Image (tube, rainbow, N blue to C red; front, side, top):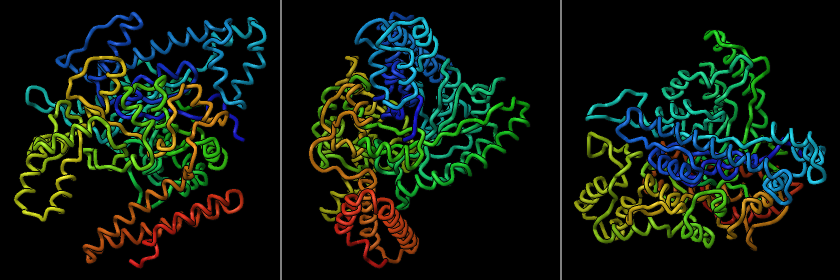
Length: 590
């Protein structure tokens, strides 16, 4: 079993707002988590909330202030760090008490953790020595306050009708906001490669090693395959920027936006990283050192760290350990399950209860995102109810008040959002002119009106949970991974951590597919749908080539799983065989 210093899991970003203040709730216990940097207006409201709660000075940053987005983000992140530090002091102050916060910190650690051994060696719970006091006060590890930027959310901003320079684009300003903060943590870059954003990172010294070789602000890349990791790692290394962690996420078995591969399954992807970790390091390190030399920057005395982590659909201790021990992962992300832990995330009661009651049939692969990217969600969220009601009344679409997802120029020179009333009214008027049969019309109508306002929907629950006033028309969008269907207990932080480490079991009674098989099931559904679409236009040679490749990747992945589980998990092989019987489409010749 792999031994860790502290915790062997992290909490990934959860939507725009759900994990925006998660670090304040878990970092004092040594658990790392990620804040989304999409919505600076939401951060400003939360900063005011926390400043009042902790009696900190607060001066609002108006939208009229120069560089307001970056300044709001910097101020919010600095406030989060202050709040975490205050809570850490409370943890340390409980050293002499019984059943206090420090004991909670200790009890949540995995049994084999080096930190727990250190506590035991210093006599924690038995005696209060000066050595124990000094160690707790000086060296108690705190969880990292990491941040996430979706690189594609980098639209151009304007002032007085004129386009602002590129550094005022959304993602650029978010990057600057983090770079100018006091944090010593990591930037998680997701949703694909952005060369111009990567080049902008070079403007900030905190991303380069200091005289001792330490990097204050590290880079984490969220990737879907090894090739992407290698290409992006080399690109950044050539700029003197080291990727400290590659965070592999299942293409479909995750919360929020899903980025499906062409049938390449999670297990084989993890295995490629397992076998090629050294290649990744060796390829990047020479480029990195050469770039530092060209920039006349200090060469690190020790080799920089390179971590590889994974997330997406993990649901029990056995799967957690499979990723750590067999695939040699350095941490495992547990995300959606924390949406049932109000102690950790900001979620309104109605939505949390919806998630707790939801079953497999309620979680679905949707078209809710205006980006046109598949989006995992659950039926019955309040924003979806409002969207459907408005569409039925002939008022499809929403007012676009935040505009983070304005990308469509189908009807306008200036980009608009596909969930907006402006876009959907034009699209529906075009649909009317086609005079389609009723069944076809309804299908097209539903597709046009399915995108909903994520900018508002993914942040409103956060405000409602804090009893911060919202508009009556502001409703909630929720983005859980499908794995949450097998959990229904609203839990405490300690209970969820105990579940992760196998000390208790929070799974509902009944069947839950293995992590890898759940993802395979989703890919089989995608493949089946693509085959059905292809059969309507069998002369599309490009679609046929893609399907042939998709099928081959699925077959290769299935064979890989049969070998992987052949001896130790014969029940999983049997489960796999039963799953395949439901998909005769795999037997069809393309």
